[in-house]
Image (cartoon, rainbow, N blue to C red):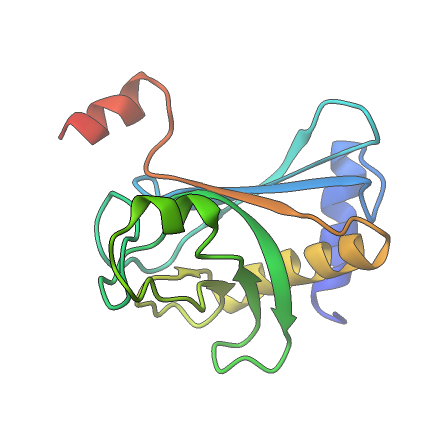
Length: 170
């Protein structure tokens, strides 16, 4: 908190978004190795606060369908837990598997414990360098503590623009 909070507040001030924000949204694009933090005032359009590089990848494009497949899930999730004592510096848990994941898989064990975390290693998570994960962690925690209980995290295989769709055709 001591290291990250001044930088986080400066990002929000530059974006003209109150901190902690009334709205917060995280999205990940696997093919581009990027995590974006969006925020906004109540009932207003969201503003891109910052893009962070994802520093390691496992699996390929496509959804996670079973435990041990090394895939990063794709879909619509929420942050469901905060771990300040993570073995991977800090971690924010995603509510994988969700109802859609369970409906689309025939596997008995879908896996779990999917996180946005630090330390630049992964077997199915979204890792950031330690400084960036501190900023994302503090932002999400302060936003939740200010009353936003459901922080969405959408994980896409690629950007859904012409270049990203070309990557998916591969």
